[in-house]
Length: 223
Length: 180
Ligand code: FES
Image (cartoon, rainbow over all chains, first blue to last red; front, side):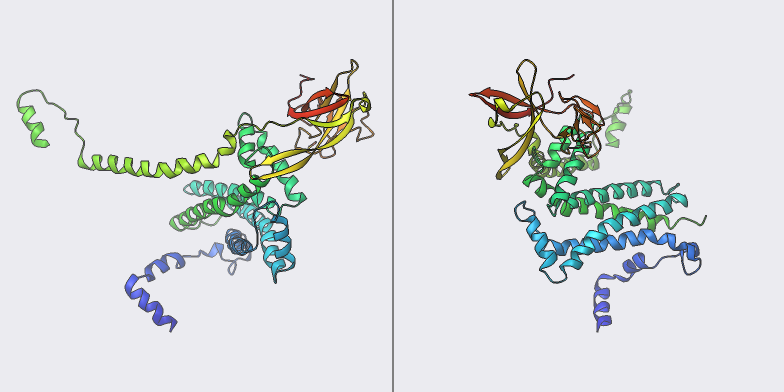
């Protein structure tokens, strides 16, 4: 049944070659943990992506309950965590995943650094990777405010003060991030928009570039 | 086009024609139109996003905080509420200030917001630093006038102060004017 559906589509759109481009590629021996166990260090990039997918999915589901309004934000988080079935798990995934993705990304960066994989011709991919790193930090920073509890509020206060210490532009960055003169209602909506639309959009575009370049250039050789 | 060029050449001087090829013309016009069409939503959206930067600073009212007699040369902490309009959300927000009387009787009020990263400073909070404001977060210290002694990059901000009918009133926060 599934096979015939696939064939029906394939006859019309010829999707098999596309599919092969994505999935069918060389996995060299030196990156395969089945050959050398130490090759597990090559898994961190994939793990980062795996957690990113979890973050996107759990985040999408969290927005079914969350509201980005200072009166109700905390209450909605409290409700989805304690009253909704599996709320602890869904929010837990998003909460712990946020830290784990940074850890994995850091390990991935270390691997790339120590195997020298950033060298020519892969410099551009290193730069894209760094941009991904900053977008991830941005996602962490903007997401931290959303529960609108004391920790979130003061962490954002401090974070914005750090941004405001940039010479000359500082105060404009501050007002722009706050959406006004204080960390308040407009800051929360702004951070929510950045957290669920702007930064994920940028992240997906960068990830697309990252993976395209890996496929184009292949996995770097052994040490 | 080539024929034109040949014609001219036969008259003697070779003339270079600065003509636009069809391809160039099309890429300019289509590119221009496309750019124009994209710029409309882009400009609208960007202006929308940076609106807070272009809003005038809100004027704040005078708030009565303490009787003049209670202010001494030792900083006194006062807490008060001020109506704050945050976009569509209006509320009374708590503020704090440290009020001190100078030797000549003038009264000044410092904001307790640490100029390092925004924690709250307190007068003589740390027993090791008498006669100073101390911030518990990263140990910034300030003098009685708010001059930054350690950690913080700037002196404590000051409130606009006025004294009327035996009461101290505060309004806007401004940069410190007591130290350079
Ligand atoms: S915030 Fe006061 S010392 Fe860092």
